[in-house]
Image (cartoon, rainbow, N blue to C red; front, side, top):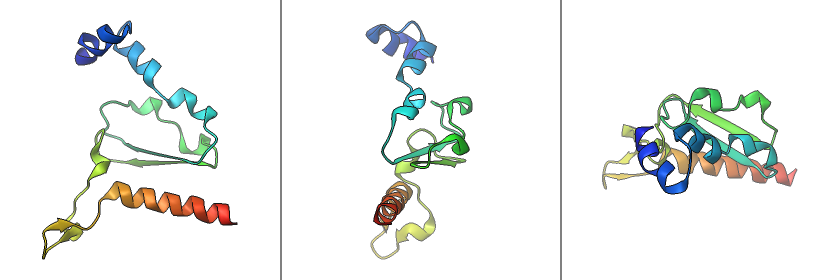
Length: 114
């Protein structure tokens, strides 16, 4: 909060960090989204308080919300487990977010084909 108030708020004219958070949040704009939307968030994300996360049961059918216990703010880009390493090349086979995104796109495609 202190960093935002010392930098972002001053540079862009927000009253304070709360004003910045409220004006930059997309939560209040979800009702305007008409295309399939996949929301991924972690409970330990330091930038989003739990009371701002929508209740999954309140979302329209074209939106999906996945909440994980851990991941921080950008931790979904890479989640490594021992089984994800190719022991011969010591390279990752995959990471969580691209795999989950591919599943969502397949689901949308399957729904559109019905």
